[in-house]
Image (cartoon, rainbow over all chains, first blue to last red):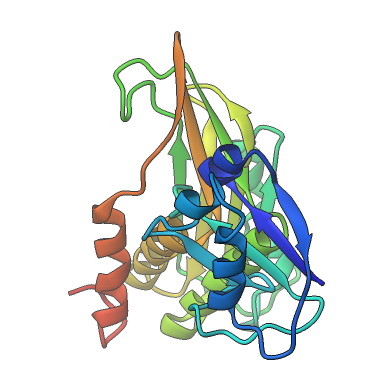
Length: 82
Length: 170
């Protein structure tokens, strides 16, 4: 399984802070994203935001990142701390 | 204090108020036992909640973060600063949760042999924190609350450091 997390505006728009998603061999981050979007609205449009950031195991990565079983994947808007 | 890798405990996130005097007092390069005195400059930065930002009358601010990743990124920024400049020590403390105008959001302190290194490292840590550390601000006014948008100027400031070759901003 993949542990998926959502933060800030995205968490509020989706109405959920995280979920477990089945892992498949050879799965990339882009494929996970497309499967999540395939759940219909609000997933499709919320996860299509162009400036969305993604982290795998708490490090920012791009969409070609290969996922391993048990990975923690997070989706979030651009950061605004400090 | 001897030169060495800055430990992870130097990057902290807390929901309780930041005690400026206490943090400054504890960020001392010497413990009274030293026989070497390499530190010549301590620079610190405090970031405060303003009562105006995207809208004119901000009454409160709530900071969300990504527990675990936040601490890792903040520590990474301290280590990066240490590879760019000669630092004896560095500290970053960031507050999360709900806070009011005037409250301290973030505190950064840097100890170096030279003031220019200390100023530059402190600014580097803040510029990188703004674009890389997973924090999100939600502001409140009397009748509304909204997520703060990321600023293009913050992204430009971070990019300028990555372009700079000599460790100083161009």
